[in-house]
Length: 285
Image (tube, rainbow, N blue to C red; front, top):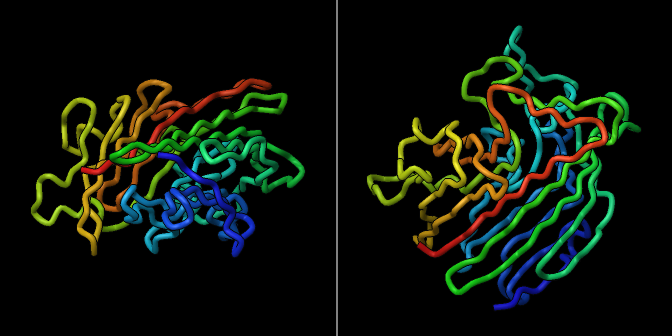
């Protein structure tokens, strides 16, 4: 089954990937106008199952800085690239003037199966300073029972000093708040169980208990859910292709993050790169 690339002419800052013009799989907004205090960055939304059920949520009222599917790091050199209030040990969560933004620089490649983009992560304290240079690759493949998105981000430190990347667990000791990396916010109803035990999260260990899965290192985690109106079911498998990571999971939202670290900061040495390689598989259940 082939995919086709089309440009949404109603918004020149969006690329749409679909199975022909009648069935769109996902839209990538690479030039967003989201508020600055949400740490403006490119995002995927809406994203649909192979049968057309929308699976992502953009700017939910409980956390407007959750933008469908987007890649970010919570705090880099003291800059909030996650969005929302920033947490500090001395005064908890506060709104601060520390929000960075990701700016689309150019397309390196743009085909139906593969988008390659360069981005600059901007320091709000000095607009001319690029904290991170990123090359982002988004690859789409389609099968009979679903489709997959592979998201690869190569993060380069262009500066002369090491970059210290934190989350609010490592930065301020906020236990369990290690969210960072690739984040996915799903539609609200997807994991609403309503007494049905087949709607669940499932870990590589075989456990379906949040206490076992949140923060535990594993190669993959799954959502088994259902969407309203059509009542169709979808299984979403999130895979870390770079090796086990400490997953951040909030099923009540529902939200998951491919967290690259937990208790200790992630250090990117001056002039060096780190690669994050992930796959999201959207399958009929």
